[in-house]
Length: 188
Image (cartoon, rainbow, N blue to C red; front, side, top):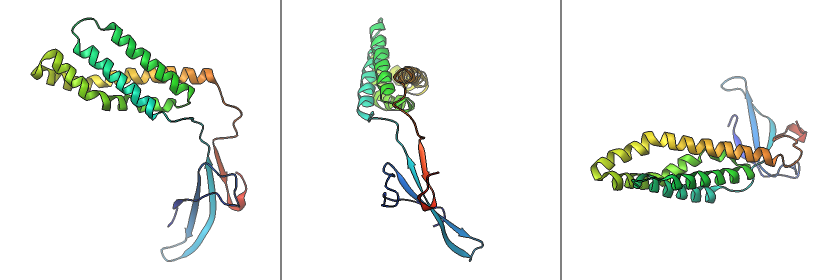
């Protein structure tokens, strides 16, 4: 198949390719019926710089944020303590992302938080405002209001995570993130 990419395990010819190696075969043809054959094989190694999985901490953070948002929306009085708990949990999760070099997860985290929190947020709106009005207020919060909530979560996670990653610094010398082995096994 022209331009097909298929997984290829590391072989004796290229023993250094361990993380991710793909065989890219380029087929050459001059016309519809003139097939020459495979031209060359290229091995690409992508080095993974991120460390650790952030799924479990992200889900724990999302549950904490759902509880915080429920407390803020369901209560009639002052809710500054709940807001500070939410900000603190978000800052701690941002620190964790920065230390693990997984700041890009800050793009996904507000969506995960929304998936966990939209039902409790809607219920909290119905508890606070009554069933009928709560349906409309809850619908507003899970659609329009979530852009604000998710934006604040993203900004906090990204800023704190980037700051922690900057403070942590590099893990050592960098050769390059992508290594390409061309035909004959020579490194390019």
